[in-house]
Image: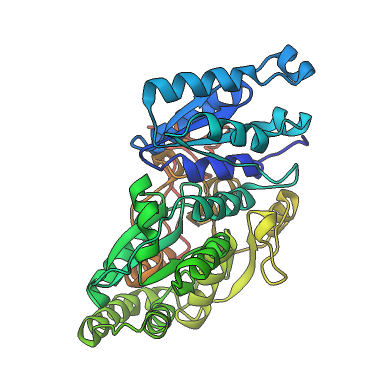
Length: 429
């Protein structure tokens, strides 16, 4: 691994496991080195305490040299007999993938042996797979394996596909989707796939009127569900009033539902009024530099330019799997080069904002209080109001002592510490 100033892009294995870790009623077994899961498992369970149970088999040099998988057989037998899970997920760590252990073949043998537990194997698509590819694999594999034949519900229902643990602000954004669907369509979710789902929710996905795909990695799963159940799907993360109205209109057309015009008009009017004061404060704002998941960067850039009248100086994505010609993946040295501009507002992860020592809004990276996480949506109507306020007055990041590392003499979030050790950003106005 090369040297990194910031956190490197995670592996496909990490994306897969973060997608699975939130699913209640399941067990996740990693066949691999204990050290990997010792830290990752704690992180998953801290962030999703009600999610699936997580185990690691551990392997040693003899297992690797001889291709011995007996630890996997023993672990699965103990877990099935003790926990009696309805579903068991198998994932490899990096060492078994490098050596070439055939986890898929092992899973097929285990399926025949343990008929009371559904066993599903996930593989991370080789060395080049990054987090987003791992998420895509997990969503598609789950959609192929768990949903059962279902009658479409009598009242409007939907699935949210792509609300996952790896995506910043996933809970608040999903809550806004649910609020809009409730107010505009009187619709209820069948499955929040996968950040707030249990096995039963996933089994019932086939009864929905529509699938809402809020990240591009969920498209394969949505296509699979459409082929099997005939469920139409809408792809998009709606940032801003215009995009949210267009998103609602697409849902109307795809699912043959009718949105409440009264509720929609009220939401639009309230959001536009909220944005007016923000726009007055943004008249002399510098250009924006935006780095996040491709769908996030594209959506926020479009909102900023088309509705707030701001200029976007550059945008990039934080995972090479999702890079496009318009929003490419930028290695960290290229990102650092962008920060040499004289004036800008940076929307990115907290590490890059800290390094820049400029105004910033966190829209990417790991959630958590020490990284400036705020439980407010960025998408939908309320997200538009929130983004307007954040851009017109970028918030300070938390205590310097809570950030990892940092520049000499400064907190990791930029700026000079005060007498209490707190760091406050200087606003651009």
